[in-house]
Image (cartoon, rainbow, N blue to C red; front, side):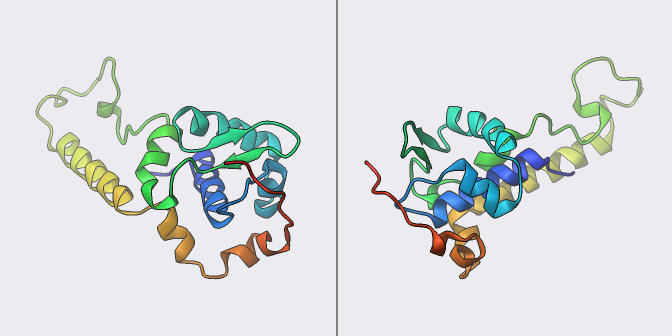
Length: 153
């Protein structure tokens, strides 16, 4: 199984916001920190905002921030919002399947068990865990060089 770029950068965006705790994060700053286009991040921002994983503040001094502590946002929360499909094999997908064993195959059960184990592990890790694992994250993301306007609560 391979996660999409959208999921990868969604997690990175949330990590940036967590490391920048107490301040609004701006998409151009996040894009610059990760070397990715602003347009791509804006595209990712929409489902994250809709799912309540980020909140946006409009206006000249606007930006994005986490709506709750990073410790309360699991990797599973992000993955379920940003991934389109978890079909590990043809038999996971809805529709007509050509395999005569589809209803009695051990592969389907084994893959489903593996997928559930994957989800369980993702639920055990929060955005905060990822940020705390990198003591120099603020330096690496250039956050220590930013001057922040005051943010409204």
